[in-house]
Image (cartoon, rainbow, N blue to C red; front, side, top):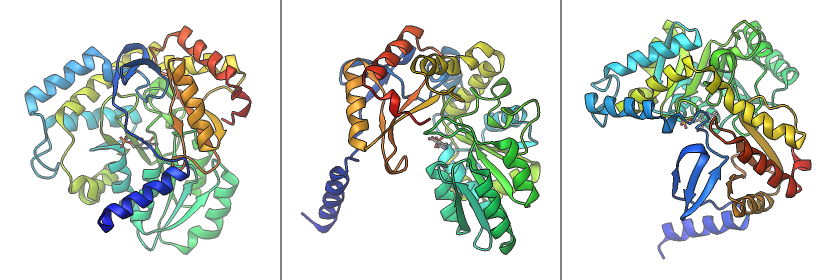
Amino acid sequence: MDSLDAYATRKLADIEGRGLLRHLVTTHRGPGGAATQGGRRLISFCCNDYLNLSQNREVIASAQAAAAEYGAGAGGSRLVTGNYPLLAELEDRLARLKGTEAACVFGSGYLANIGIIPCFAGPDDVIFIDELAHACLFAGARMSRAATHVFRHNDMDHLQALLDRQRNRHRHALVITDGVFSMDGDLAPLDIMGPLARAHDAWLLTDDAHGIGVVGRDGRGSSFAFGSEKADVPLQMGTLSKAVGSYGGYLCASEPVIALVRNRARSLVFTTAPPPASIGAALAALDIIERDAELRQAPLAKARLFTDFLGLPDPQSPIVPIIVGAPDRAVEASRKLRDQGFLVNAIRPPSVPEGTARLRVTFMANHGDEDVLRLARAVKALGLSGACVP
Ligand SMILES: Cc1ncc(COP(=O)(O)O)c(C=O)c1O
């Protein structure tokens, strides 16, 4: 064995020893949460396709039409020849939905975050970031080389203390958070965070990957979840890969901010534009999200059916965590649910903090109520519901 293979083998043995080894499993998804793995038909409660729009006929037809018109691939970076007309159309739609002057579409949410953050923070600047923010926000913060302070999850007193102490030592400041936390399902208190950041001349960036389509007024996301006013969030980032059912990322912001991003975000400038089919799909999905209030509300209603049955706190999004603790306990719980026909993945470190391995249960609009209740009964029978810390 050469030194490279020996290195990989040693690392894998270490990962396995800590109960953290992961495998790719080929999955065929279908309607009603159906997911077939290894010939076994399961009901998935771990997809982010909250509105089932990835499987929607109108969305698929729009993807096919876009590919037929503009090709299977974009053929270049957006700044060279890859800027086919659907991209501007989608950016107008996203800006309107999020109440901003402009928007910029990226290849994915991950690419968006690692591109946006270094545009607004550099080595002379400071970033304040929630400890449970998504991995790609931390990656963007690291790439910016700004001083970074991590505040306790949703703890506005801690954020305020850090801002008071650190803000003035630096040139520019960013405050970064998920709008809807991907592994916990709770919302950031943007009604408090917006004014707090502004009072310290810090720019607030929210990642609304899990908000668009399912949270806030008219499914406009977490900035619209606090009364009738839009929260004061100058940088609203998100992805097209969850409730929108497609693939791609975006930033909604003012004209000058978007113009700067188009010039400077390296993950926009130095990468090929997303394929036309993804953008065509997203446009049709946004049509459906805008017109179908019942659909938008369905995932949260399913989550509530589940939490009510188990006596858990009211959900704020379609994501409900069931904290189990040790990784092997989470894997064992997932396996037992699988034996009963439910696909609920175990989420382990480093996706979540040490000691908080969990089942992350997500709800989709077309889950059957009876399936939701069957899952709730199965979770109760595992004796796990007492361990929930949503
Ligand atoms: C909160 C959050 N931000 C960003 C991303 C990355 O988005 P994408 O899948 O479009 O790269 C994800 C998940 O994938 C996420 O959960």
